[in-house]
Image (cartoon, rainbow, N blue to C red):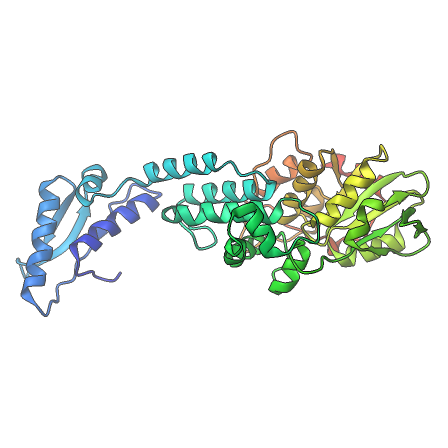
Length: 389
């Protein structure tokens, strides 16, 4: 452990370690005993003696050099907080939680982000590089996230969106690095995607990506039911209508699984939509258009990991529809999955969510995560396998 020559830094480190402590072991720091200027040693010793007299610490003096302090032991953190003028982390966290609640995040993405910050800070961890002391920056990031995920017409440029929703044409652009870092951390986007592809996926680029859909639907009057799939321009997603009776609608997170399913497993009357990871506004608009015309189950097939859970939950909350997890259940993960290197970031979902049971499983110490490409596609009727958990 590095020996510090500053009494204030030593006292602050004692409090830092106290806030991270998971056991009742004594917290000890060992000050530097080497000083070029004797006055620096005198200043350090005097301040540490004051802290000891305040009942915050105990000093252990060096036996061989009695004028030097060998160790500083934390005795009572409360007087040390007062002595240093620092608030307890619990108080800082309570203030942060209150201000995050007062921010009233609107979109599901911003709400999930706020929950992730609180969860990390409650465990004494930074989250995407930000700690509880960075609250103002986090609040700005939440506002930018709301602006990014608020549904607007697909042809609204990035700076126009930012100006309209945030009152500053460059505010959203400035927050993009942190927003993209969060989306990557949470599995909402592919970690390898460059910035331009992320913007296109979120509908924030100059031109939004087409929506891949397979099934018996009419796109601007054209029946694409005999095609493997079609790419629907964002401008036309609201015009997609069924061309025949629809049995089910299935959303698929990853492209390889989408391609395999539509070629191997799609039944007559099935509509299959590729979400491209976290669904863009164009994907959601297409699904809303279809669900408004038919009364059929909505299934979702994605990775069994925090990102897959978030996508399924986002579909539930955004579409206001019950979503049936397809090939997403604990038994499958136990049999075919792998233990992740970092098992953090699992969202806490309400019990009413169709994905809450799977989220509970993913928080277990030995939970396994599963990429959907590992599993061969199955017809949506096979969702009943989830009852075997």
